[in-house]
Amino acid sequence: MFEKTLKICLIGVTVCLMAGPVCAESEWDFYGSVRLSTFQDNFSKEASSTGKDRSNMSLDMNSNSRIGAKIKNDEFNAGFEYGSTPNLRKLFGRWKTEYGHLMIGQHYTPANIVISNQTHNGGGALLNVGGLYTGRNPQILFKTKIGLMFSAVKPNAYDTVGLGNTTTSLPAIEARYDFTAGRLSGGVVYGTKSFKSESTTKSVSVSASVMGAFARVKLGATKFAFNIISSTNPGNYGQWLEGGSTTATYDASTDSLTNATTTGFILVGSLTISETISFETGYGSQSNKSGISGDKEDETTAIYVQLPIKWTSAIFITPEIGFYDYVKDSSGTKKGSNTYFGVNWKFDF
Image 1 (tube, one colour):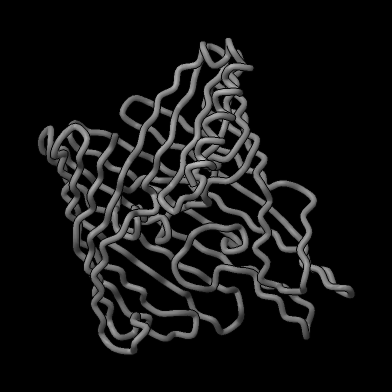
Image 2 (cartoon, rainbow, N blue to C red; image 1 turned 30 degrees about the vertical axis):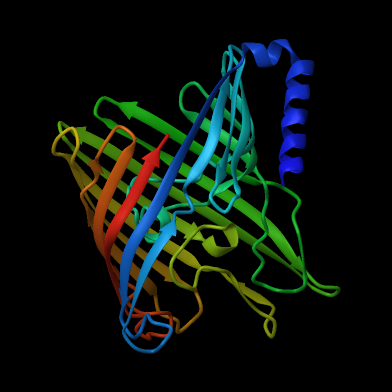
């Protein structure tokens, strides 16, 4: 392990010596964030894997803990970020032009909307219950100075048709527009991708898309935020969602493909009580439809209340309680609920 680390350091030093002026002119700013969850989850018997009411205490590192660096000079900025797995979260470079900036590498794609600070579920932010999260993926992105951006994204093929092989001919395409008007800010996002599931005798094309809109408004010490989403075959797109009925269904007997759809929304309100204490509550609702005749909606709702506390300039403690209602699945079977409470700990450095 020591020899491997030494080799990496030597390679880094050699690159900097060869690059000379570039390394000397660039500013490096290292940072990190340790995030730990201590939560008690109380599942009803329908939501429990044991078939009876079950409680579970967790004390875990959040997957959104990170360590990384920001690098910049007059011509470009770049950065990298690793998570606690460890896993690569970000590795990117941005080149600034008079029209905007060009970014290449792995980063959040345009089709992501985050308006909640919910800490449960590893900093879940209600993203899987009414939100829109498609992750950090390799991409080529151009953002204009007026807030409009376009991106060609790695076309991951989440194949549920299952004919054996998948092929893609184009990247996923995502677009986003952000705006600010006084106390109001917001934006719209859109993403689309397609792939083929193929066997030696059959080829089925699957298309998937995600879209959403969001708005935030600040009224003194109070803030409100809202988003709405609508997706077609979101499971095939790679959107993070609760429940089933999110992917296209293929019927080999009739050679037909049925598209699934998802709609949802999130509403968040927060209040700054003092320099050290604030309050936030959020509600999310999501409905998945398989599109198959006779299937019902697969619904989920969630609500939380939290009291973020800024203990020091680097340490943040967030007590939080919440409730998930998994309602029913597409067959009409009750899925139960989860009531949780606990504390999220964050140490930034």
